[in-house]
Image (tube, rainbow, N blue to C red; front, side, top):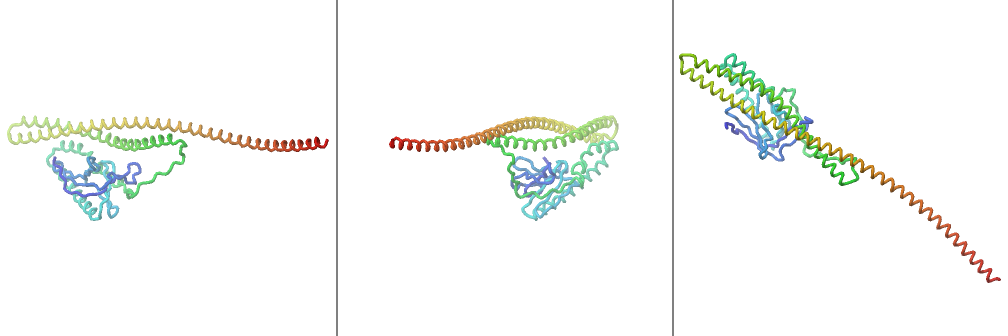
Length: 355
């Protein structure tokens, strides 16, 4: 509710290829709006971009993030919380410099906000509260959100043209079978890509679930401690107004913790649904793989039948050629015999006439 846009620009959005970690993959077909948002309730800065109704960038700015200018119109930053590297292609260098300036400004603001939050905690918390709060905040350190400098990757500049598919060297002589084979190969390649993304998301979600379980346990311990503190304050005599004020604050803190617990439980349910979807996609992938293997086996059988037919055709052609040669020889012999008979008839006719 308290999150408002504070700066917007337009750019082409890219993400690093999760497989190669070198090539850029465009996430928008055209330039989209990229905005900085500030959440006043949590004192957090985020970079958000939507392509229609789909969020293609949702990156929380942390003190150890760095926006790197790799060319006159292209820049990038790593977000290990999202397990990716974002890249932006601007229409001019001025837009890039303005975006980088805002990035540095909000990064510094995020650092100051974090320091103030830590100082406030140290001043208002008891030693036991500090211990509990430290346990709760430990999964959200800058290193866990954005990674170390060694983990950042500087990918290659995104290509301007799409790669051309090379023709297959093992083309099947039957067009219908080849079309079916290519269709299943395309389906399998798409499922493999989706499976890799879901596997990475599943691994990240599993790690987040463990952290959230630790946070939930810490929140429960904090809630119990605060309930005990409320009971102790109610039993203390004198300073009624002070006690009531502290009780109100503690009750508000308890309500906030309960809301946080509820949100974490909803997130756990969502992650379970994603795991189920990943399992269904894996089953579909296995089914398509089996169908592709059956298609390849059928193609091999058809190729063997074709080879056999070609061999039989070749043998038939050889036999026909031999038959033609023999027939030609026979005709030549027959012509010779007819000629001899003609001569014999003429001789007999002359003998008859002479007698």
